[in-house]
Image 1 (cartoon, rainbow, N blue to C red):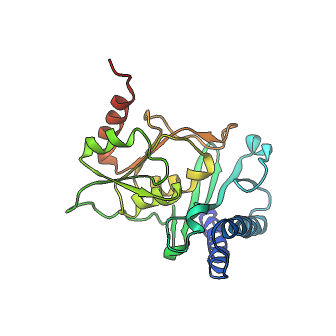
Image 2: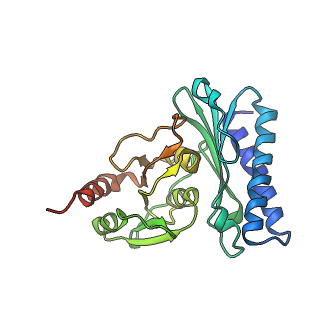
Length: 248
């Protein structure tokens, strides 16, 4: 199997486990906890079978520091959006499986189980055009960033609150929104797989200062993120930069 096929198989295995649990009667926090554990087992099983020599860096496991010297590291969020997953009315949660190799993300899959979709780096998704509607910017539904206002104003765009970070990135890929602005911090596993898919689809994915996103870093924290249609990147970055300046 290719690395992309392995990523997709792991994401699908977790998606199947999560959907089965969601239909089993649990709700809320209990469902979220069970989902985290079941999805971790599903992903780990596939990776152990198909890529037993690789290191796995997952939200749901202790940080294996061998990753810092490894050539191949799988960066995994078995259930991104546990809160949304625990709400049977919501679809904005995801499964992330990405491979970091030789300094960059090289293969990834993101499952959107509630939508029965899996997005991969190969073949890359085709981003639908935004013609005929007002531009839209995805933001956190619980912690909208301060930079969202200036970004939306720069595009005369509508703010769209959505759930998990992975879903917000894939919402740009799927054409549901045109950009995702985040400045509240997240972990590397929250964005690695969706960022890889977004890049493969031709989208811009950078830090809010325009610098590259770096993964498999010693500190798993990633302070901020912008994913958008490439033709919007300069305006968004300029608006965020201007909005960050202190008054006076």
